[in-house]
Amino acid sequence: MVQEERETWGKKIDFLLSVIGFAVDLANVWRFPYLCYKNGGGAFLVPYLFFMVIAGMPLFYMELALGQYNREGAAGVWKICPIFKGVGFTVILISLYVGFYYNVIISWALFYLFSSFTSELPWVHCNNTWNSPNCSDWADNSSVGDIYKATPAQEYFERGVLHIQDSNGIDDLGRPRWQLTSCLGVVIVLLYFSLWKGVKTSGKVVWITATMPYVVLTVLLLRGVTLPGAIDGIKAYLSVDFLRLCDAKVWIEAATQICFSLGVGFGVLIAFSSYNKFSNNCYRDAIITSSINSLTSFFSGFVVFSFLGYMSHKHNVALDKVARDGAGLVFVIYPEAIATLPGSSVWAVIFFIMLLTLGIDSAMGGMESVITGLIDEFKFLHKHRELFTLFIVVSTFLISLFCVTNGGMYVFTLLDHFAAGTSILFGVLIEAIGIAWFYGVDRFSDDIEEMIGQRPGMYWRLCWKFVSPCFLLFMVCVSFATFNPPNYGSYTFPPWANMVGWCLAMSSMAMVPLYAIYKLCTLPGKFCDVSQRLDALAKMERGEISYCILLYENKFFVAPVL
Image (cartoon, rainbow, N blue to C red; front, side, top):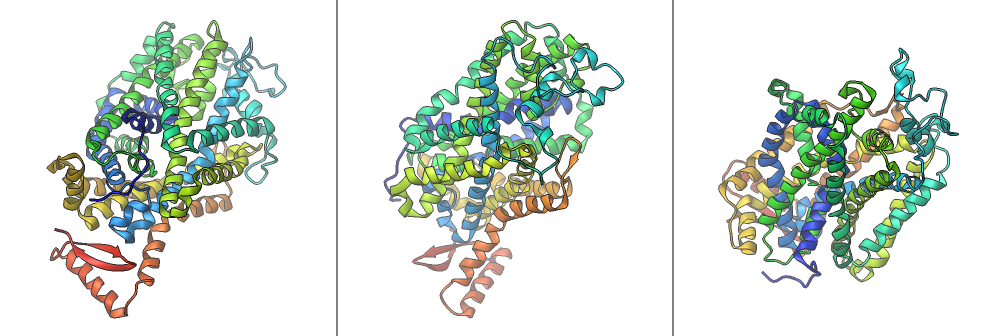
């Protein structure tokens, strides 16, 4: 196979760190440990590892091999089966949408980092200008009016940083706040200069952003286990309750965590692997990087629950009173715990540097997916990568401004709920179907053998053809069946906001049928030619023939899969 000359990673480790840095993100710290604690402790690892083996790793391996063999971005790789190119644009759009709000999380971390350079952290007391009469220390929160009270750390996040008290809802956003806008601008500048030269620059940045979180997590763990109550927190995290495995919700949450934690479906793995050397052992890379991702999630749980156990002990409350997931953990509970330590400002700086590096390389991956996907599809952009990168990051910045207004948290919540939920499961499902049933597992296995000299075993081929597609179809159905409208605290979004959210989700999923219809409508030839192709489709469904729709010189051909 003759390959076009293409930029490659400077070193193999650059690629591995980039993939690890993308896959290991904030959710590893704020999502997995809480799920493990809530769903039977150590017993939760049973469904988690089960879905990891039957779906997570096979899909991770599939995307790495797909990008490396075809050496193009998320859309360009579908030259192997052009009618499925729409799914490439689906994942590119999803990565773009996620960038609209994910960068905002990093700007919050940067804001907290700047605020930590002080002798007394600003979320310690209730005597600040942003505090409300409901602000109360933990000592006062044992009163009957608990539900009306808020801790200083909670009010600092919601009233001091977000200023959500100045908004009545999503239809009352206000202007962008200059403090958060400035932090967002710094994040955008960091992203641009990390990406503007391609993998030659981003591959060097990840040496810091991908390794720093492990250093900080280790330091925090060493400090955390010395705190009173830490061991009780870790015991609660690891406590095994196998009866919880009888609850279907536990299995669904494990499956959902696998789908989103590995980063498949964003086009990032395809984009990163497209810059590998053709003979790179992508099988080994898939095993190493996906395993590191899961181990990081498990390891971070020790860090999180050592501090949660400390908080539970210090305030003499049950652990479930302080345990939570999402932004509330890293921007409320954890800062509150750090504030009680000697040298709290130093620990706060260390913690928010970790959040910053966790977020930056994941954001870099998402942006690289968009940039690589589009410049590989529209070749004229190759000569203008720096300008195009600037265009993408500036456009992202402008949209993100809606999330740094007084009511920006409502926009953030809406985007988080709809941008990459059902749509990304749908995108990966179509990817799996396109590879397994249209391009053909045997042909895909031949491609891998051509690259690494080793044909995938029967296990991988069965997962790609049957297990993973069925798993993803199940997850898409569950996602629709269990859908709940978004809310933020007691605020319920108006119907029009939910409609906007669904339009956002459908806009990416619609790329699949729209592009397929476009290709079919622009086919040269008469109607009978299309009918013959449809007849071939029917024969394939009956098992009489296996084939793939190929595009050559702007014409479709039905080619048998040998």
